[in-house]
Length: 119
Image (cartoon, rainbow, N blue to C red; front, side, top):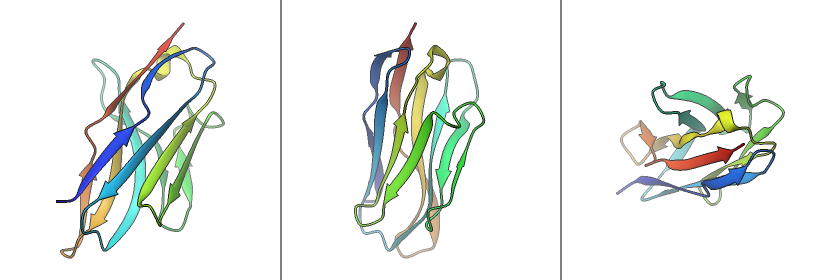
């Protein structure tokens, strides 16, 4: 069974840092783009950062310069380093990846990890 498992969320004060990790497990042949999305209460899920298999990155304007996405292809893992956190960054953060386990790429999601930034 292929799955994405996130870790690293928690409670932090404004100005602090957190690092999220998301590991893909299962009989994966390859991984396409990977990314992080977030959903605050009462709001839609939005893109935070994405990274292609070649390492090109893209960020939402609200996190550019504060967050850094990276990936370790040998470990099938994507990371999100979050610095200078603000209360408005509070949300459930979801990992997303295009996973190929033999039948073409499937858009897959993790279960989410809560990030809470106190003022």
